[in-house]
Image (cartoon, rainbow, N blue to C red; front, top):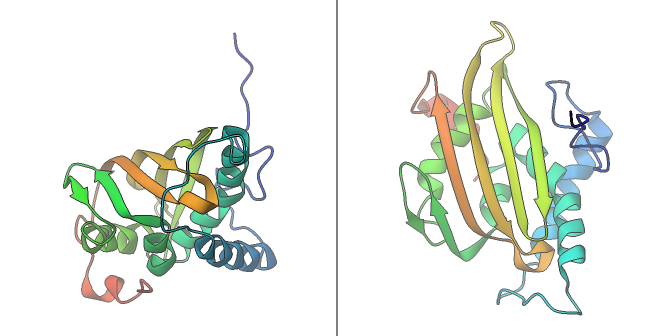
Length: 188
């Protein structure tokens, strides 16, 4: 039998469980997210000897906790800026083509999964070069029920390339559309 692993062993923060990371680390994750977004180049960089699979994978591992914290804090501005302008996004409400075509729909989802009293966790995350696969779920802090869950594959060409393909399967058990009150909590 294969030994079980903690997918967060070599990452800056562990988002596999509902415990909130310390305030100083949360602040650093948001600052890093903002910094990584500024490194995005206008043209998707090629994988080459100067920008190889290993470097891209390490950059994706460095970025991953910043993505998690941005979601927990409802930072839709940062989440949208992780995408390339030519993003391809496949999900049950899609397909969406282009950075802004799906973000209005996603804004509803972000509002639901980042609402007060709900904690999002990512128990599984795996990396291979520019491929990031993860599973997520949102836990109601009072009832302990799962309110939503899903799995996602990102193709992210490190800090220089950003997310250029996203595939997602989402299941919402309640709150399928966010209320206006929740939508106001998402930073745009």
